[in-house]
Length: 218
Image (cartoon, rainbow, N blue to C red; front, side, top):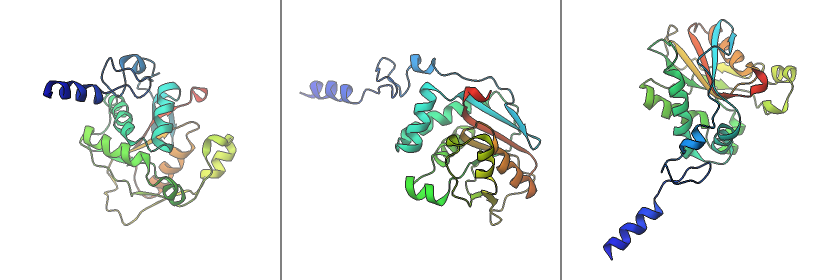
């Protein structure tokens, strides 16, 4: 009876791949699905306001499903996976060893709708991997913007303009290197606005990394 129950528990708790349901690797992502991800080289995607911005992967297939399900479908168990991809990418960069992780914030309206900011969760997981502090309240989103992917470039610029401000109550030294993280960067407008606000507030050493970018923008 005990052996039967042990076998039953082993069957129930075998980890299957979230993306293809295969159990052969007993992992949330199998090797086959991992190999389908289009990882990008550790080279600058854009230089915005004298700061380097990067993207870890192309926004398609596995990465697209990961981001959309984490962001919109409450699949928080995918956050460690996103954090791991960012961590692997960051290891290839020559970043200042004292950086603080800054997740891109969402508006109060979106937070009320979703009940969480997926980038805050990824930042927490990334913080544990890198041993670097996260400060999720340094940047405040003060404007309920439209969804960027539905807009053309000029509309995106107007949509995100003046959407962020610095929280002056956060006691962070101005010479602290900052690492901004987001899920997707396309035109770079969001990173550009955040970097602008940070530099206006006196922060100068800023790097931004997105988990993904659509290949049409590269």
